[in-house]
Image (cartoon, rainbow over the protein chains, first blue to last red):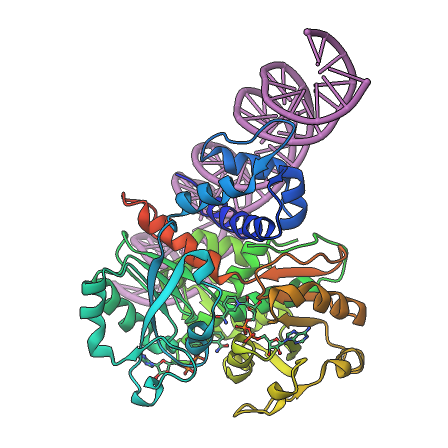
Length: 213
Length: 213
DNA sequence: TCCATATTGTGAAAGGAGTTACAATAAGCC
DNA sequence: GGCTTATTGTAACTCCTTTCACAATATGGA
Ligand SMILES: NC(=O)c1ccc[n+]([C@@H]2O[C@H](COP(=O)([O-])OP(=O)(O)OC[C@H]3O[C@@H](n4cnc5c(N)ncnc54)[C@H](O)[C@@H]3O)[C@@H](O)[C@H]2O)c1
Ligand SMILES: NC(=O)c1ccc[n+]([C@@H]2O[C@H](COP(=O)([O-])OP(=O)(O)OC[C@H]3O[C@@H](n4cnc5c(N)ncnc54)[C@H](O)[C@@H]3O)[C@@H](O)[C@H]2O)c1
């Protein structure tokens, strides 16, 4: 199995390769890609080696082919449907974002307890009441959900999601949720990210350049 | 120097300890805290040992004292001022968020190229034109900035920030920015997080429970 | 056609990070 | 006051990640 760090890097490669491809670049060496994404070329070659061997010596990798291979490996050859719970500040920002589609990810519906949050303001994704959630997940075979509700509701929402069949959760609430072992939870903790910066900036002496996930 | 993973965990401990303290808990063992945050108790003890030795055998740690020590270690004993560049979808979500203050972080101003983004809609933080940015950073001695502009503007914004004296950047744009070695850049890449979930959920067999940063 | 060389793929080395295990010990109880 | 025991702090170990280094090799040019 590929490690979670490696998967994150594969996703980063994919995005950069898509951009390169769009600007007409057909071949790229691990060195050049490494410069673009800020990652050691040997690391890139090793990550790609998990998926097979499709570089050409003295030339590099075909951008088109590599994007296809990475999409396949990551499981986004066909669009992945995702739902969102909590159409507040963060939730609405996600609903308005057009960039996920290009990465093969589609937020297909949102759910919110508050009726006032249910008019689509600008974005075309519907916001439903909570009691539609379970059925929607079942009928549309949704496996991944984003939690963007207040911390005190996160566990309850997670429990509902899991019992409806959700297998992966991206949690914006700054609190650990407990789920069965077969469910994967990933956290986005922005306050932590900022505190991390505060620490490394405050520690004044010269140090490592980048803090990358 | 403490590793970036350890710093992230210290921040997580701090938040949970604050919650515990608020609900009247005065002492907590590494085991109990570990259960709450989902982290191995030995890991917690080791992380705390970086900062000194202030647990009490057979009792655990004093929540009050530990919050103070963690705040000190992370550099948030006094409120840290942060600026935001790009008051779009994500930027406005951050500006509306009340939760940073509790962690000792204060977004004091935002900057946007678009005049239409400059009315404070609900949030009290001012949104200024870009040409005020340099002076503001200098005068208010800001060291940390959040980039929430489109990818194609991110490098330009980063260059401006760095030349004005910014030392740490939290970048929401899904693109690597190049900065001098003394500047720290941290990335929030939501598409990557979702793709990672897609991968681990798709790889159907039984596997590790959580993907934590 | 043959050569010089840029680049891959990977084995080995180095460097962390996380976990286990346990001796030390202070607290609370009898 | 002494004993039992929960809990810390840390040393040792294991596991995992990243980097280094280089042989293999396909390409493009002469
Ligand atoms: N906004 C930010 O910049 C930011 C930053 C860091 C962390 N967060 C975290 O992200 C989460 C969301 O933040 P926000 O600023 O968007 O909050 P918000 O209050 O604006 O939005 C929360 C939404 O969740 C809905 N909700 C509440 N309980 C619910 C439930 N049980 N089921 C479904 N919906 C429910 C509310 O109606 C509301 O629309 C919070 O946990 C917050 O701590 C936000
Ligand atoms: N919204 C999301 O959910 C989301 C998700 C993933 C990534 N992102 C990334 O976050 C960034 C912001 O996304 P968004 O949805 O908020 O975009 P947005 O277009 O809503 O907002 C961008 C803002 O930046 C301003 N801006 C543009 N160029 C600028 C410049 N040179 N200086 C200052 N301000 C400038 C624009 O006026 C606008 O207000 C993008 O890079 C996007 O790819 C957003």
